[in-house]
Amino acid sequence: MTIVQEVKHDALQAAQQYVDDVYAAIVKRNPDEPEFHQAAKEIFTSLVPALAKHPEYMKNGILERIAEPERMITFRVSWVDDQGKVRVNRGYRVQFNSAIGPYKGGLRFHPSVNASVIKFLGFEQIFKNALTGQPIGGAKGGSDFDPKGKSEGEIMRFTQSFMTELCKYIGPDVDIPAGDIGVGAREIGYMFGQYKRIHGGFEAGVLTGKGLGYGGSLARKEATGYGLVYFVEEMLKAKGLGFAGSTVVVSGSGNVAIYAMEKASQLGAKVVACSDSNGYIYDPNGIDLDTVKRLKEVERQRIREYVNVHPHAEYHEGCFGIWSIPCDIALPCATQNEINDVSARALVANGVKAVGEGANMPSTLEAIDVFLNNDVLFAPAKAANAGGVAVSALEMAQNSMRLAWTFDEVDAKLKQIMTNIYRNSVDTAAAYGHPGNLVVGANIAGFIKVADAMVAQGVM
Ligand code: NDP
Ligand code: 2IT
Image (cartoon, rainbow, N blue to C red; front, top):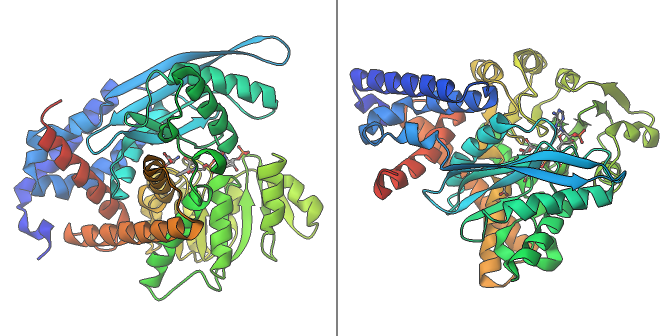
């Protein structure tokens, strides 16, 4: 008998009512925050069987509390551009939940950043971090600063100004930021330098994703993309499938996309497409990753430049067209809501077997329904992309021990963590009456860990 078969129908009804009431209150209290509403809706919908089984969560007001950030900081970030003009951006840090560990989560620099985006990301991070099995709470931050077209000097001055304010709220045992869209090793380096200058000590554990020469971890750069592919490989294996011999489409061409492409290729897949925010490339011979790395990691160019090196490849303007390319496995690794129901139906019509979310919330709620209703193997973001933050926690562990593991040691731990998350999600989905539904499994598994800690620590 599954756990959910043991619970009575009226317990399920009470749980559903509780979820509906709290969701309505969230929408009312956080108007004009559609991304945050979307993330809350996805998680809450999954939690009904868990709340029915554990009425103590309702009694303790867990949903009301977990959806309200412990702290939300917004601040002015002033800086001077290369023309001598004063510029002002807005900085954010949401410290969402510290029930199981210090706040942990990335920083995003992108013009689309606002309170809704930061809160959806911070909310997701709570459950993702719990799934890793490591002692890290949930947080996120960033700014509406647009790094595109900025000089090195402008990036440095902005980033230093950002950290001058953020440093008041973080610390190795308090809150540990890392990268996300628009924040990579370069920005983490400038932030680490500024934090150190202000605080006066070498607190390596205050940021993760650091350079290898000053406290960074081997395999952190690769971790999100590799971890995504390890997770999807487990999911495929359970059905007698695998990356070997498959055709793969990856959106984005940033940190997550590049290392997802690398690992998928190493496992014998042919990656035929990737993108940036302007458009996508299709290379029927398989993407030449060295060219993509040079264009994106070194030269910070647009992906359209790829066809100058490989004239047989095609470039198409716009982001959604990439999902019309026939493939066995789709790995959205760019941004939120990049797959809508139309794109999802196109993927299904072309016979996609598996979708693995490398980005955070890349599929709309309607797109997820399309995948689940058509028996597409679906790996939800908070499980499938947890490898990045998991290796961040391993970076913190190495910093605390003042030693450094080899690449192979970190990679082996990452693989084990991704396998554990997969098994935990599968087992939890089955136990709560939704076998094979990893959305439900991952949401409930992450939630229970945090909820139990919140109950144990009392109302606060
Ligand atoms: P990068 O900045 O390295 O790359 C982002 C990529 O996505 C770029 O190719 C970018 O194109 C594209 N992109 C960004 N915004 C948009 C948009 N609005 N529309 C279309 N394309 C867009 O970021 P990451 O690779 O680090 O992050 C990608 C995703 O993965 C994000 O959702 C992030 O939250 C998630 N993630 C990242 C982790 C990490 O460790 N870095 C961990 C877990 C999840 P362009 O260059 O044109 O902007
Ligand atoms: O979304 C994410 O998990 C990240 N951007 C990584 C966060 C981290 O702290 O490494």
